[in-house]
Image 1 (cartoon, rainbow, N blue to C red):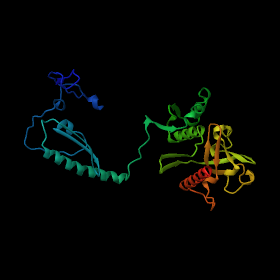
Image 2 (cartoon, rainbow, N blue to C red):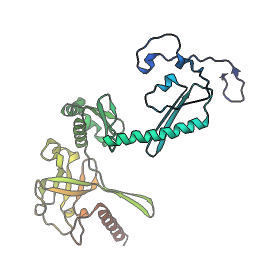
Image 3 (tube, rainbow, N blue to C red):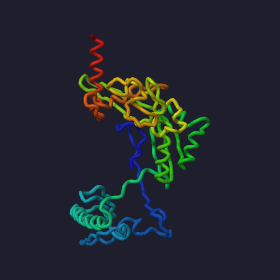
Image 4 (spheres, helix red, strand yellow):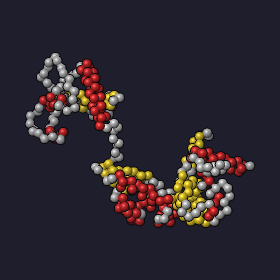
Length: 326
């Protein structure tokens, strides 16, 4: 054994002899047994030096105690995924290892066939958990951290009481939810998303002269108040609740953004309680503007998909830019 006290390979090192005492008490594998003299498994050598050998294929684990080689091979129907080899002999011929791999492949196929008779597809991987609890992470706008926590932590404690979950606010707009059941976690997730809701404006990112990416968001909103020049709308979950009075939940839909054709008064196009599908065209801290006509074709008056609405918005911006230049 080399005792290294140097920083580089060129430095001098000291050599010493080392003796490894291998012990395997029963409690290492959660078993009950006597503690006494070293057994054959601890000694690690054999006196049966015969010329003949025999491979035993099983999944019991007895070969680790009684025999000279323990060759574990794991895999799927497509092939091996992992293997581990423990031997008590100075070496093992390659032919024996190859034979063991062949037998393991055949045995693995038999086990998988029997398993498929009970369950064709594997079970879904459960979410990460602590003991019997389920952990889920929710991202939210970092500016709404104070709203989520509330005065003296009152808001977040109320959410925990309603959902029977523990909610922890992490850095960077991340909320960690810990609950006992998936229903409780889903309820806590919905409550966090609702209370931290903010409108996000459609944005265009230009990476190259010929590469323009537009990020758009549709919102289903409910008309709360109608005026001559427009209406105030709120998200569906906030309509009829105290959240509808919050500035972050309110948005303004101007009469010019309701249709491509002129609308004299807003009450001719929308009514209180009506559900609308809009795009966010302007979003600041205390003011948000939405548009209905951005999702409608000006010629056919049909609803547009996101890709079609993006193309229409790009053409409109290019036309406005040309008008400014002229």
